[in-house]
Amino acid sequence: MNSAVNHASGATLRRREPRPDAAEAGQQETLRLAALIAECVTAGIARRACILHLSHLPPDRLRPHHLRMAKSALEPLANADRARLFELPTTDIVVVWRGEAEAALSASRTAILQLFDQEERSPAEARQSARSPLWENLILPQDAGRLLTLTETILNRTEQLPLPPPPAPPLDITALATFEARLSRADVARFARRRQICARLPDGSFRLRWEKRYLSISELSASLDPEHSARADPWLFRRLTRTLDRRMLALLAAQSELNGAGPFALNLNVSSVLSSEFLRFDEAVPQILRGQVMIDVLPDDLLADPAAFLFARDFAQARGYRITLRSMTTDLLPVFSFKQIGVDFMRLRWSADLATHNLGELRAHAGSLVLTDTDTPQALLWGGANGITLFSGRAVAQAGARPLHGGMM
Image 1 (tube, rainbow, N blue to C red):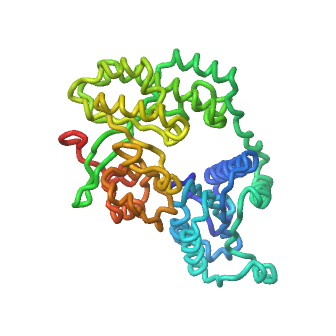
Image 2 (cartoon, rainbow, N blue to C red):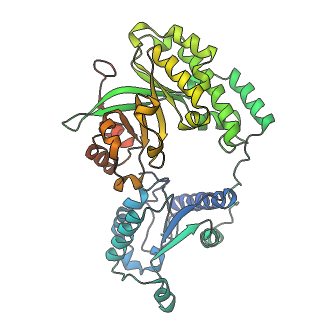
Image 3 (cartoon, rainbow, N blue to C red):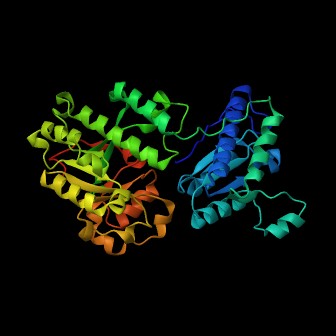
């Protein structure tokens, strides 16, 4: 589940007063919700939210099994794009997500109302009724005050805790220079991570096809410059990713990294493909890996400088690399085509709105699509129904994958 859930399983729901250990977890969850809402207001980020007012129910409707069923009923929303679920110490539950997700919203709301035997009412009817509403829909940042009032009430009801810190300021030129200087001296190997790209076989099992290798930017940022947000300024972040590219290429050019390595993929900027660091990496790639290394580039690079992208694509493919266009979404799919841009794969990010999306002409290239962020069975089912066989995500990792056999293709 794509959520920020702290399970306060020790809470005695019948008394509505959590035990001390659960109380602290509930306070921290409330602070995290307040921080997220503050970020939405500060940055003007559009989000949808709902509040499940379980605290409005009588104690005999709040047994532990009621709470478990309520969270199960929220599963469709908890799988919406960028969804986060917060369990508050009052037993109320808040879900915040991106996009409309109307089908998931309707499914969760209907299940909750049926579970607690609540009739569906219009907002006007709810206002006229003496009965408090169980379900409340919100739009952020317009309705942020409603949620901030809720969190403030909860925190004031317990010990006076410090308000969540404001979002870290973005990198500026000076901070970026300091970050890059520290990065040049840092042992980046400890921040290197891997993620599996797997093929789903006809029997439903998975086989590893290649690994994505990358540096964890969030961990690097927290270690080298916790005072600033590395991603807040998109232009300076783009500059930073080029520095990270060079460090990753230098790391992988080491003989110990490539000897015995299987197929893998790298996130690179187009400019990094044409850099001296890439040439040194290319010289270090053993012959057995030729044709087995992927270069994943962003659509932004193609749109910003098509000529540079095409040149880098032709150069890399001539050297035996395969090109993937990553971070594709439904709104980008109509803009690009395999035939026009000549890439080998596209990485399509799963989101709830894909559930009703038809791939159309892209179905002919379904074998070259990688569905990422497949954290739920729903994502795997949709991918399979559309002919996709390559997946990456928690649902794949949990299922386990057979060892690589016979290379990438």
